[in-house]
Length: 462
Image (cartoon, rainbow, N blue to C red; front, top):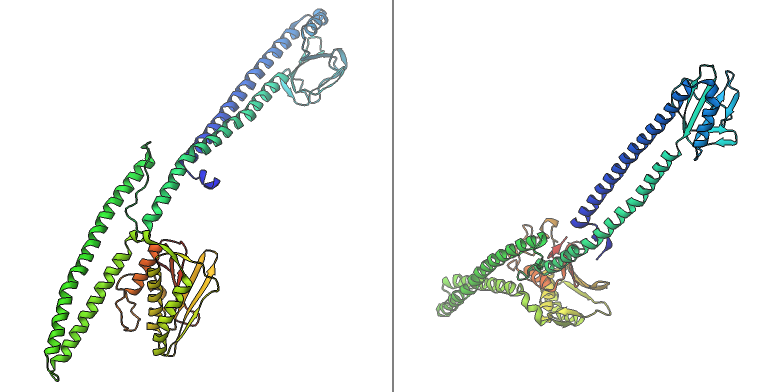
């Protein structure tokens, strides 16, 4: 199970989407809280400074020093700065060393982002202040720092920085944990589908006791497989019954024709007609035998008899049988076998039959003075057998169809056969989970490759 597969499940994606939306909502909510809190605190600061300014604006000048002293004594946290300045801006009293730079002297509240300069030194804390003109013409400046507002904002920001990981990390962990079970079930279904893709329609998708949407989907697929198996069984049964039941009357017909042929005197013109009819009956019997053979090979129960197959010995046996046939047709037959060909797991007779059909087709479609080559290599996945002929080849558009029953390409010469040889090979390939590849030969003709390792469910690929 790849780690990346865990994030491809619907459960993990749903949790991540909801987690992301929840995180965005939390950020937006905290942002609104921070903005509203800052606004509220700023209004309180402004209201307090405005009240102080209004009070000192109307106070008697003789009581002003005493009132300022009282205000300064009550400022235990040292958050209020004040100063009394004459018309020229010279300091008279207070803890402000000078009028804050850039501060408008209009009696309104203004922000002082750079802070103020006090008698004991620079006070760089952000502040808000107001400058009021007294009746005496002097200028009274009050400044209150807003560090409390900034501290509250910093606390909220830290809450966001801590809160987001506490939201996102459990969301990721929850998505990881909750997606493992559905993904395991999907992998189990994938393993169950592989035999079905190879033709074993008796297999079904596994169901759990949870009865969730995955089980609902698996149940629908199982019902569909039940119907497909029933229909395929009926079609296969009809075809097999037709092929099996027609063999008996055809065999009886051939016997009667043979008896009639023996009773026909020599020179009778009907003798040639009888002989041609017997040949047609033999061709029909061969086709029915081939059909029943394909049907037999498509029964996956034969895997129970699999054993180790000595591929090198099997290829040598095929070469011994078909080398004389190639010599009779004046065809150069070459068998190249790798030095150390590992054994296969399969049915020895069926592997021999598949190789025999491939070599027989190559010899059949190669013209005289041509060449047929059987080349064997051992790749990391397993043995590869290439049967290369010198015939007309197989067109790319026909390579997926030549493995079907009775299919014959339009450009194929009229040779003996019924279009069932490659169908039998394809059935053997599917039974063994091998692969069959059809391509062009190096010097013309066709190259049919038998890849003796587990591959895709297709019978042939270009």
